[in-house]
Length: 70
Image 1 (spheres, rainbow, N blue to C red):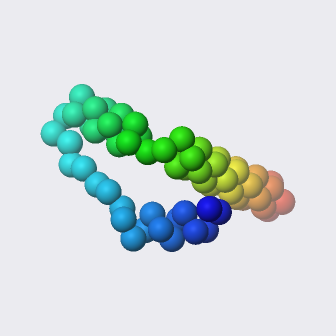
Image 2: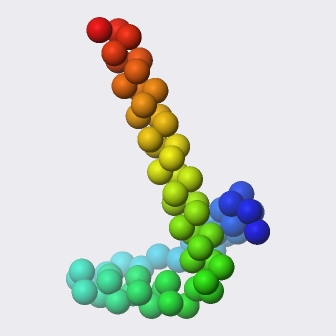
């Protein structure tokens, strides 16, 4: 499953949790990720890495544009 397919599927089944404490949030997060298959975890990691690359490219473009204005 590619990133686009995974993203579309994820949007139809977003899971949320309102934690009353940081400890509860950490436990819920750990439980959530342990329920995922290794393939799902890897796919999520790849998607996050791609998002980080996009942000980095955007920041570089923004910095270059600001330097040109100076």
